Amino acid sequence: MSNQYDAIVIGSGIGGLVTATQLAAKGAKVLVLESYLIPGGSAGYFEREGYRFDVGASMIFGFGKKGTTNLLTKALAAVDMSIETIADPVQIHYHLPDGLDLKVHRDYEQFLQELISHFPAEKTGIRRFYDECWQVFNCLNSMDLLSLEEPRYLTRVFFQHPLSCLGLVKYLPQNAGDVARKYIKDPKLLKFIDMECYCWSVVPADRTPMINAGMVFSDRHYGGINYPRGGVGQIALKLVAGLEKAGGEIQYQARVNKIILDAGRAIGVRLTNGKEYYAKKIVSNATRWDTFEKLLPPESLPGSEKKWQKRYQKSPSFLSLHLGVKADVLPSGSECHHILLEDWENMEAEQGTIFVSIPTLLDPSLAPPDHHIIHAFTPSWIDQWQKLPPQEYQQKKEAAAHRLIERLKKLFPKLDTGLDYIEIGTARTHRRFLNRIDGSYGPIPRRKLLGLLGMPFNRTAIPNLYCVGDSTFPGQGLNAVAFSGFACSHRLAVDLGLPTRRD
Ligand SMILES: Cc1cc2nc3c(=O)[nH]c(=O)nc-3n(C[C@H](O)[C@H](O)[C@H](O)COP(=O)(O)OP(=O)(O)OC[C@H]3O[C@@H](n4cnc5c(N)ncnc54)[C@H](O)[C@@H]3O)c2cc1C
Image (cartoon, rainbow, N blue to C red):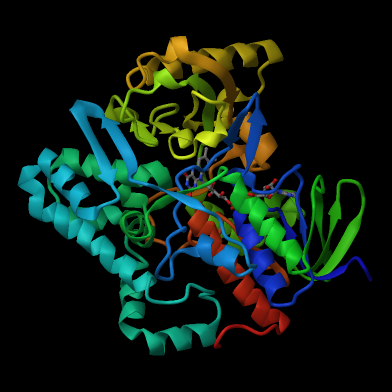
């Protein structure tokens, strides 16, 4: 019976941990099984020679102090945890083609003025577009964000916030590109809006749901971008501490290779070492492809998943450079996050757009004294790195790193001479350490879809099996997967008969 739980969560990404902590806080008996050595998945970390590198995410939404959309703050508080954060005054410093060099300031007006100075003829359109994004955000930020699969909750929020609910229903099937084109005509400015979306959705504005755009384009000025002191890895570590304090369990190096079914219902999991654990409900924080094609018999892929795969495909992975550099590599006044692109034609191309984060500008403790971390990454497909003999793979990695460093010299002219440490990760590295199919960043629409309407919620076609994380509504990003975790645990709590808040 010690192997019998209320819920087993496969994976300790932020989506999995928010689900687990929420359930444990409500009194459920929860077990998290994580295949890696530490929690966090794409929000994990690794340490080398005095540097603590974030493996992925560094630009963190969800740590605001007000409203309802600060889901990381709320998830930690639910298990009596908190993290000190450092406010980032600029979300992104863009270095784009045709000399389009501008910063997204935390202050909304300052950002608008800087953008308008590049496109004075579009002054009104710019303001109208971003103001409409606020309308979406204000709707979201007026209500508790829980499971849209729970009718009693939906009824309650509808009666409490009818206008916000109608607002969200209106925006749910829309994409940011359509809204932008209502107000903006300048093709270069529309390209900029594409990049504003691409840098977190990895698709242009036409395929980026308006709900997500409204959230990102407003919350950066409302709750702001805040970096957790001690590194992004602290979020998962604190959630795990809270989980254990609330009576939940986590096991590391516990790789699930099978979801056990009985008469078509999920009843347990089997690990690679043969151990089996049973629960009333199973939650997968692995990607949908990993869940349905690797942990379940692929030949019995449910029809709903087949349909979903026709609408969504795997996004590329990344080529990542984790650099330790001498402090004088950074020009004075450097910002923490940068986007670099030299030619609009290459925005979506393999190794086109470069994303840069320098978290030590906010928390110097992550590097030895007088040194900084530069994490530079660029989209890259797994096919580029498959079927290569070890030596060729190594050479290809080094050549790609060299090309990236050459391009980064536009931002950091002294980069060559100030390099102290270098670690190169490819799509294969992401696949292996993050346990994600093809190292993918997550699902992206194959074509233009109706906003977020096609993204599945947490229940699946298999009774007692739920999915959580970036393969579910509302998609990628730490705050988004925290949303998915709140929604999943809410639906599960109802299904398990646990007490839920006010519904
Ligand atoms: C390079 C990069 C940069 C990013 N930058 C940002 C950013 O700046 N801001 C932001 O908000 N987001 C960013 N993201 C996205 C964000 O990190 C992810 O969307 C989010 O962390 C995904 O969380 P998740 O809960 O879906 O699962 P994941 O992080 O994928 O975690 C899933 C966990 O499940 C485990 N697992 C999988 N299969 C099994 C199994 N069979 N058995 C046991 N365990 C298993 C994995 O080991 C992993 O720990 C970035 C991502 C990357 C890769």
